[in-house]
Image 1 (cartoon, helix red, strand yellow):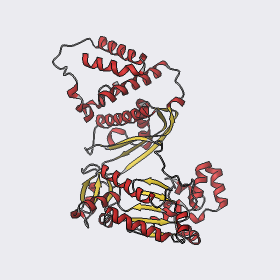
Image 2 (cartoon, rainbow, N blue to C red):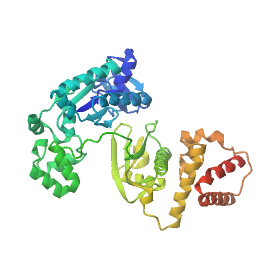
Image 3 (spheres, rainbow, N blue to C red):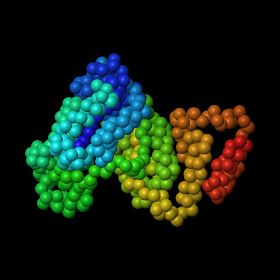
Image 4 (cartoon, helix red, strand yellow):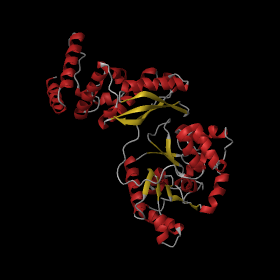
Length: 446
């Protein structure tokens, strides 16, 4: 059984504020002209507003649409309540996203006379009673996750309930385009068209073997999905799973930012992601870069490194390389940027660099991470972030903690640099438990 909370963020806001009910509205991260709508309400969707549309484009379609600032804490709280309710029916629940989940109700159906529709209706009633009349969900029922999600998303209306019975699966496959199936990655529509495949029903057992020979494991998985089979079984969320990706996104307020703004923010995003990776003891091999222009059109691409990394400078240089592969110059075309790192591995399993400078860089960055964890973000930072200092609020938040050196006499820059390198090297050679204590003494004396 697949459960999808309808227009989750917007419905929660309308439930909390009765004055917003029945009018077009959209939830955004930041209420600005070039913000992206993360969740339009049903009323806005009827007018043509879609998820990921910019507020500027949405207002052109629906001038009276209300823009609401997101409340992430509220959404996390209610998401937990939704899935607690679902787990009261069966412990076999796989949370797919903040507003979507799968539940294995096989045994529950057997115990209740073989009617899954009754179980679904009971869940709907309890959901509305718990969260309010404006909170509804769409439910799809089938013998696999692929077909259940297809059923749940087949009706373009709220509070739907669709059951695909076993003898109806082939009919659904014959009339469903391959791109409508959950799990078919971008680009597979064109690849499958070379084999004459446009509908899920076009994939036979023989065709699955052809796809496997041509595309290896991804081809096999895609063939199974088109046949309505799950590439992997339902995985109940018994405990917190290990993260599969690290990343950051940033929307620059000005429609046409200059070179320093874009590269400065990109460096900050890479630094924050790398810092979290080092804290969790992981490194990543595949770098993803996303950029969107002022009109809201985006492009993304990924690039796999030869070895995994947790080095922000390597991540930044790879993102610049990806931007060139996309075909756009970095400073002039993007006012929204995003960085992601996947294909993770444990840092202890990473190939040790034979170059002494690389080893020093990693140890120094770990030292700076510990100091920043104690004294606040970017209290100390690597030199390649210097360009971002003027445009990043995180630097401005820490300015009051540092000395104003404009009125102080000039100092010997080389001597100062040599002294700082000597201090960092002493920290590098120190045991971890002594680093923070030494850092406190250095901060007090400075």
